[in-house]
Every structure is written in structure tokens, then in C-alpha cells.
Length: 340
Image (spheres, rainbow, N blue to C red):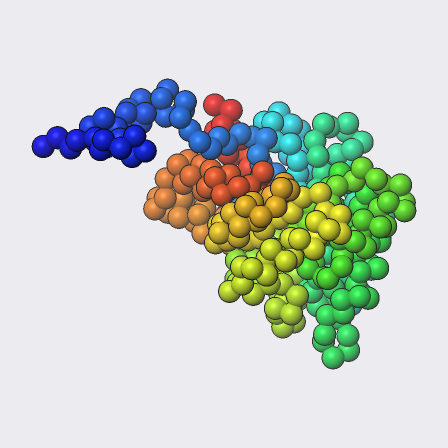
């Protein structure tokens, strides 16, 4: 049976005049018609730093991911440059004896984060350094901000410490500071501090829509804050039920001076990425967080999920939703595959 094309010039042609399978018939044609293209330049590689020399500590809950001492961090940075990955995101595993209630190690010029940044800068590597601005890797209670005696997270009191932390990281060579704490007003406080200290070119990538998610557990293991956490983070991280609120958070951070914004977690929040992309003309990043990575990696290792296809399909989905780039623990593997 042949369907007739409607006579109206405004109507779309029907089968067989239009066969949507035609462009899918060959590899070259599929590549030619691809609406979304993923490259190594779209990837940011998160790396965990630990104390010592020639130390590589596997993280049990994140198969294939290790904590690296600064000398091995340099090796990873060199590999990233060779693969075309434009930036590393650094996260420290601060020793327990340097964790305090006020997280003062965050402003120590010789902390792990700063030593890692300086090592990369001193090596002259052409790669961006993104540093995490929050207190949870430095507090003994595992929260992102200062805590009152009755266990409330103190917003305004935390801002001063975050601003000092960001300046400390900028002095050590950070190109992008990324506040992940979700305190109100922290982007403005950090921008003001950076400007006053002469760091006018240091970017702020704000974790603008960071949700109180169940998918952060392996990350907390990696930075050593998981077993320390008292209570939860629901008073400052966003409710997973809320979408409109994310737009308010993003608008506020842009107004305060963020150069780019982030949605976290990633895969379960692609609707938020798409909403932000539609509403704002600003670079948007997503973090494929530790729990998302771990689930996929374990499925791959068990033979349930095709490793290459699954990895590339998900990373392409981030781009398709509107991301300028993705923070992902798959960055190295994906870049290797993309480079052929």
C-alpha cells in the first residue's frame, strides 16, 4: 500500500517520499548527520590527591579510580594533555589529623590541593586546573560549612572562609575555582575576594544546582569525609523534587559573577540541564558523579553493560541535553576512544 503525499504545501511529506532510515544506512552518513558531537575537549577529569610519594590507592567503591600522590598526579596531568583533555578537577583526601571543626586546613597554603596545583603549574603543563571550594574535605564533621554548637550549618559565617579558600587556591595556580558548598551568597563573596587580591582572570564555575543526592557516597569515601558526616546536607543542598528552584539558583549565581554553572548530579538531572540551557545563555557543565560512575563501571565489569557503547552513549546524552562539558571519571577512557 502506498500512502499519498498530502496536497497541502505546508504538510510534511509521508512515506515513501520520506524515509528517515536513509541517513542511517551507512557509518559515514550517520556521522554526517549527527546532531551532537562529543570530543575530548568536552571532558574534565576529576582526580583525587593523597599524601606521600609514588602512592596509588584504589578506591573500593569506585572501581578503576585511584587516589594519587602529587608525583603521580603529574603523570595523570601529562596524559590528559596528550589526550586533549582541557582540564583536571582536583579533590584532596585530607589526613584525619588535619581535619578540624572549623576546616582551617582549607586556607593552608601548603595543603594537598595547593601542592597539587603548584606541581602542575611548576611543570609548565598547558592544562586547566579546577579546584573545589567547600569545607567538607577539611572538617571533622564532614559538612561543607561551619557548624554551630547545636549542629546548624552557618551560612554567613562560612562565606568568609570560602572566600579565603578560593584566594588560597588561586595563589597556588587554580584557573577555575568551583564552589560546591551551596551557601547563599558564596559566589559574590568569592568574586569580590578574587578581584580584591588581583585574581581577575580566575574563573568561577559554580555548582549552582547541587542536589541532596544519594549518588555521592563513593565520592565521600574518596575524600575521606563519608564516615565523618553527622546528619545530612538537606538544609543547604537542593531537594531532588524541585526543578524551578534550580533556575533561581542559577540566576542568582550568574548575577553574583559566575562564569559558568554546574548541575550535580548529572544523569538523573538531565531535565535540569535542559531547563538551564533553555533559560540562560551561559556555559553549563554537569558532573557525572561517583555513584553514577560506580553503577556503570560495576555493570561493565559484570558484563551486563557494553563498556564502550554505554560510556559514550551517556556522555553524548550530557552534550545533547545542553552541556558545554562534563566532569566524568570516564574522561581518560573516553578520550582514548575518541582519539582512536
